[in-house]
Amino acid sequence: MCFICDRIKMIKDGNNPYFVKELETGYVVVGDNQHFKGYSLFLCKEHKTELFQLDHSVKMRFLEEMSIVAEAVANAFGAEKMNYELLGNGDTHLHWHLFPRVSGDIENYGNNGKGPVWWYPMEKMYSDDNRPSDVELDIMKSKLLEELEKLVGLVNYE
Image (tube, rainbow, N blue to C red; front, side):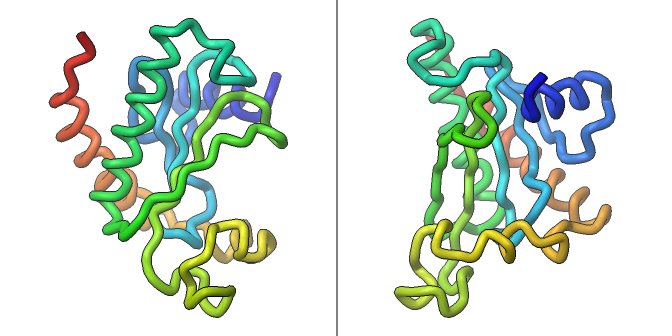
């Protein structure tokens, strides 16, 4: 089983502390590490490695829902700009990384802190120092869920 499938199993078993909301095509979770405050992921329900492997209607819904999640993340965490990643070289299960960006969030790493997330050293981005406390995590999840609830109700998939 892959890492993302393991995380989805934790959601289904009710013991993934980062889980925020289930949507039709995926699961919204807050990232384990929070250098970029509000960093979240959207995990595809289907274990596929490429977007083109999804049935067309599922793919379109997955992309639509990812956009909704990104908007909710931006609203919840005051993003000036959103960064999106769907790479899959490490964990091949389809999943979006959604980074809310604000000025100076990568300190002195190029272009006045306005560079891409990969300019920031990985060892700092994924440091245990960036893990939210239980209280911080609950606050983040509540903010994101509130924004998701506002947006999901507005979507007409027909």
